[in-house]
Length: 168
Image 1 (cartoon, rainbow, N blue to C red):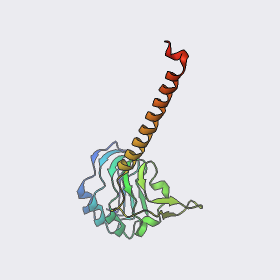
Image 2: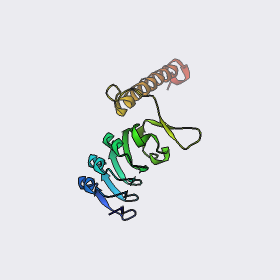
Image 3: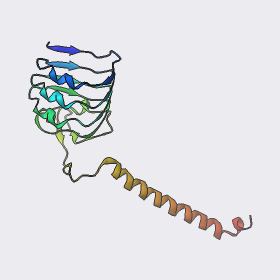
Image 4: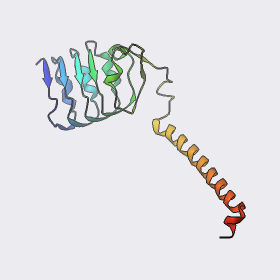
């Protein structure tokens, strides 16, 4: 089997690990379905694959770093899913357009060049030292909470000082 196109079939469920056993496949298109779960690491066994399209699903988790070993991969799209984490920057992943990743708000690691044809890696700290995305949001939440609290206390103080409001 050279190509498997199951796009636009309203498929549900998770991507099976057994997809990694389709050794002779060159193109796999599962876009525009309702697939959930993670991208299986077993896809790194597809040494001949040139195209993987998982766009417009409900996939979550990270892009497996093992996929950088797919040397013939020319097309890789996970656009409009719930993918999170760092985009691999090695191998073929350094050549994919940023449009292949759009619609995943918690995905990071690449930025678009001026000519909109090539993506390059943004300088980030290593994954081991970097905090999780929700820890960053926790800091923002507490900072905004404290600022709002201070403003409310100040506003109440102004109302108390004003003699017109004190009589009520």
